[in-house]
Length: 558
Image (tube, rainbow, N blue to C red; front, side, top):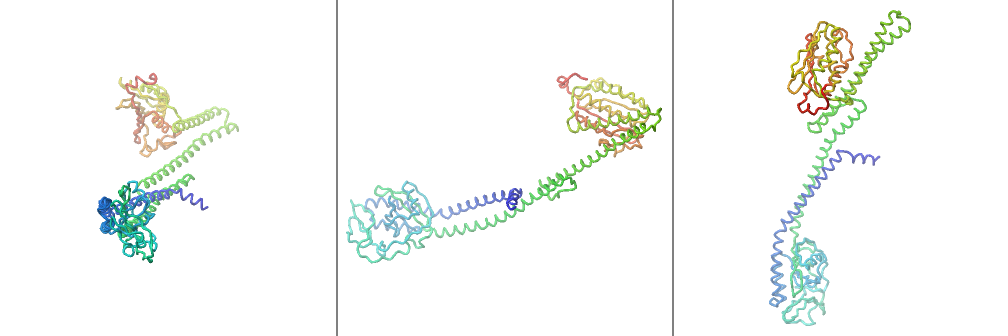
């Protein structure tokens, strides 16, 4: 269970958003901290680095004089200590073996601390640079010599102290007038010499922070390394304070940013989670669920769109239920009539001389059922996009005349006058890319519909004209007309006008719905205008076929 919870928790969108933003902020704050640390470190050490470089140059100037004997051993030591006092530090001259030859501390004659071995190796290779270190060195062994407290001073060039020199002292000898330094051996009976208070020769603690500058030099033809060691305790403390002042605000800022990011991620992911739950409820058939819109941003727009989608689904579901109810009613009525009539004829209730009459009634009901089924199949094919429109060039005037001839018997039977004004040569030549069969179906539906709702003695007019880039067909009648409410619903499936106004005319209620889909499928559009008692005008428009289309059209005009 815990594993499942952790897996679900890790897959949560708001947790992923929160962790992503938090990681970005941590990287940003870490980069900012590194930048300020580097900046302040360079700022505090800049002057000290420049001082060490200049003092090392002074030491390098002393080396040639020391080599040719102009400067004695004592003077060399005194000079380096004077230079070291200029930056309150130490100067070590280290030979190729890692031993301190001369310097400003009691470290002379001993090996270089291990912490500085890497710098020393780099210096022997000709490198130079700075290094901040904290050295922890064991005190000198007893009898290891001391300066003021037991180290004998070096002799002048050309003199020797002999083998009986003071215990632990440094010997100075002359070879060709050149002073040299070497480690002295402890001999004789000097008593225990006090250990210097600081093995490094500094006034502070033995493990205080140091800024070390190393640079190569030449002495007696051999490579040596000059080490400049400056106490950096104050700088180190100042840097620690600065780092603390940077770290603490950054830490609190990171906590605050983390809290803000958590709230924002919850705010972003919360509506999505609610939409997920609402989507599952809609999938189960509950169309009453809605997502609260709490903002006007993209998430709010998504919630609004989700609610709109649910509204549309609710509409479609209502339409589906209404469609099923209409289908049931339209099928039940003729089937009930057929069953009653057939049962009556089988039982002998209907006299033999009336059977033919009732059979014609049954045939009419069967034809009505057939029309309903055909209309439903046509509508289903059109709405599903499975109906294929075979478009080709069609001369509209010729097609209109053919259709009028087909509809004329039905109009004359009801006493309605058909009328089509004489066409101009331009109107007679109008061509559009249409499916001839579907175009005929559109015209027949509109004309039969007009005949059905036009009383005896009325007029039905068909006109053809060119308007801009369109060919327009008008179907006008002098029938009962329609109200605004009826005009808004005539394209709905199974909508029928009030029977009290239509004289009980029969129809499936699908004709105009099919007409609208057929016109749209042939790149046209249809509109209607009507007033109660003033008749109705249907306007059907199709794009005209261009001159180029006439040349490249797919087939002969029909």
